[in-house]
Length: 219
Ligand code: HEC
Image 1 (cartoon, rainbow, N blue to C red):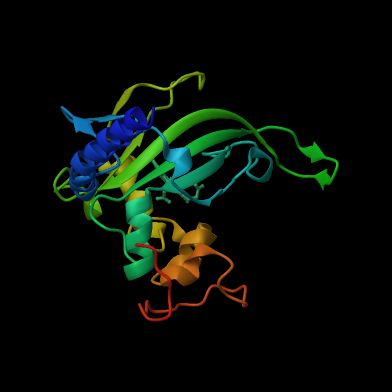
Image 2 (cartoon, helix red, strand yellow):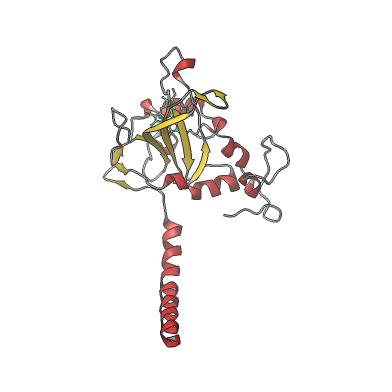
């Protein structure tokens, strides 16, 4: 019995010894997206990335004709988040996912308001010199949303620059990203571990340069 248990753990040890270097090699090269034959494969698992904010431009406040009337739940991949905390810049390879959520109920026990309803779409933006050498800022934009908003396409082609990049280039606060609407990114910009929440007494985001000796940066 004891012998068997010992044999099992030794086998486990061997597996770990083999897989650990392989895993770190994959992690170094890892991107959070795959582009095959010019089409972005729909990314998965992004609800476990870093959530940065939820802008909303409801129809009610836009004469019933808001261009984007739904909630936008925005996430950034963890490697780019680590880079952002350290440098305040979006690394080559950054991907942000924007999940579209309908306006659901407009009343809760807490009062009148806007509450998230159902998932109705999914968009992405990626910064990559290698993949998009000719796009403005090397950013490309994608949508997996179907016309009836009931399903998602498995792959997507990048939009022409005029459809998306132009507005982002003109009005976004950082690079092509609307950080002015993402408090998580504003507070973490080059702030190291201070941007992770609960590390500061003051509530207004303060620009803090990374300092390895005082900030517990997890990168
Ligand atoms: C008229 C300006 C405008 C156009 C055109 C536009 N966007 Fe945006 N986009 C915004 C604004 C403003 C935000 C942030 C606020 C929000 O989500 O409403 C945003 C946010 C995003 C985000 C989240 C990451 C970020 O950069 O802030 C993605 C992804 C995105 N847009 C995709 C697209 C795609 C795909 C298209 C083209 C089909 C597009 N956008 C066209 C204004 C625009």
